[in-house]
Image (tube, rainbow over all chains, first blue to last red; front, side, top):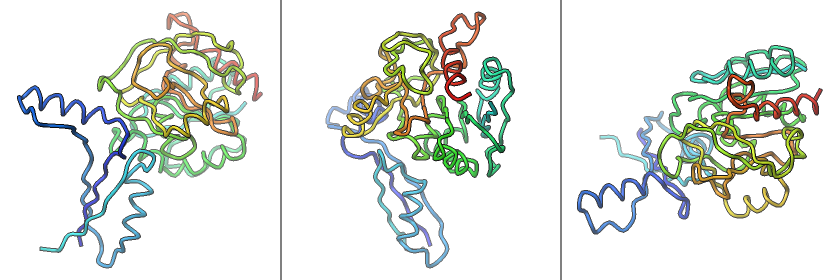
Amino acid sequence: MKARVFVTLKPGVLDPQGKAIHHALEGLGFAGVQDVRAGKLIELDLAEGTSDEEIADMCRKLLANTVIENFRIERLQDA
Amino acid sequence: MKSAVIVFPGSNCDRDLKVAIEMVTGHAPEMVWHKDSELPAGTGLVAIPGGFSYGDYLRSGAMAARSPIMRAVSEAAGRGVPVLGICNGFQMLTEAGLLPGALMRNAGLSFVSRPVSLTVENAQSLFTARYKQGEVISIPVAHHDGNYQADGETLDRLEGEGRIAFRYAESVNGSARDIAGIINDAGNVLGMMPHPERAMEPAHGNLDGRRLFEGLLETVA
């Protein structure tokens, strides 16, 4: 069973990396970019039956720093 | 005083910290590996060094903060044992929840490595008793993730309770309210990005860091 965890900065938290990416995109001539926020995607290969709550616990204890980051869990259907 | 320096894979200021503590206390600290689950009996000071533990993977200090020894450090802090975290050590203390807030990528995105001016904001703490209130000192920084951030309420509380130990007196990394170092609510845990262990003797060209260790020795001995 696979799951994806998206870790993103909370709204309002300054994102220097997103700013730099935004700046670089503008430098390449992409004028229509309003804002850029950078985050992380973590893919987990999990034992069958791992609950959402267990994954959320992993996020709170390690994968995300909830002082500055939010997380979102997405389960993938096995191919 | 018995002290311990915690060593993680990727620590690189552990020896400097050991030398600094020994210089001031006359006793070499125990070097404690992060996989250990207990501190040596009678440890009266825990020092967490700078470096790049676990290659800064995931977030600076995130993995190290979950090392076995950190549970013992947390317990010791709860008993009132002084804990000093420098640079990566400060990042670990926030990741471990012993200090509020988080240290993010520097606002300018560059690694900053130079002496910076700091204002001593609280000269009454366990760690800062040898400084004068409002004194401006110079201590080197060397970090990529030193941009201190916390929500407004936390920042107000830190200010109101005198828990900002040091503030940058110049633009360094974009930290909220120019915070360079903070103390926990009980007053026995200090985290700071600048490296006092690199300002200890005339050969360093700067002695301003030495008084932090001297003050600590005086207050806990």
